[in-house]
Length: 260
Image (tube, rainbow, N blue to C red; front, side):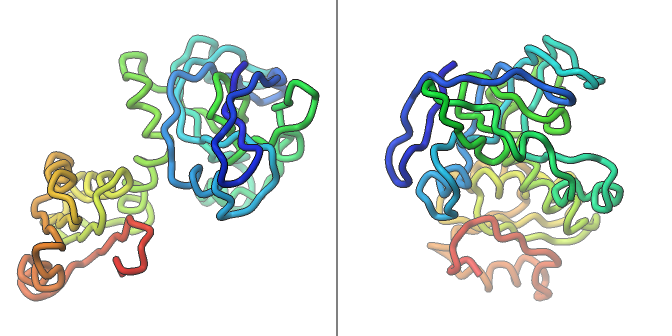
């Protein structure tokens, strides 16, 4: 199969023919239809977070199950699925508390990448997924079935951007109905924080950004108010929209210190 391989930080990815080992016990092979590009993938490819090379990054994907390993249940070949980087055992200290992202268990794929170059060299399965490729093999815990009528290109965003933004509001902050929320930044994660606040019943969902077009999108995702901070004083606008109290919740979804 073909994959986009990072062989040198800060350089363009190289499209190569690579080998993918078949799924073992508890693993699933998925033919990918789409993989979104998360900023985390870009940072890894730039070398900002270090790591070993060569590597295949990409972790925000969707596709169709091709093959399952022994011991896999609830998933069948032909199923449409999301592929995420969240690998969990379901039984350790943190998994038993519902904190799957903090799973303490070690998996076969953690020690042995399924990816090999044409010359046999091991290739790192970046972010436990390696989805800048035609096909992936991941642990079954990284798979989430979805209805077949959902377009796979749009569905891929559910694998990271949506659950990050919406999850921050619904799961981490546990925003209360009737409260007010400010979302700073209305990119992919920010729009889903807006959506999460709206779905949670926030009375005022205030989106802040520099782009009018992104703020228009925020309205479509459930923002009740928008503020272009290049044209208005953000602090004054938020206090004015919250009867002088300020927001009950603030979500910063941009990677800029100035946003704080």
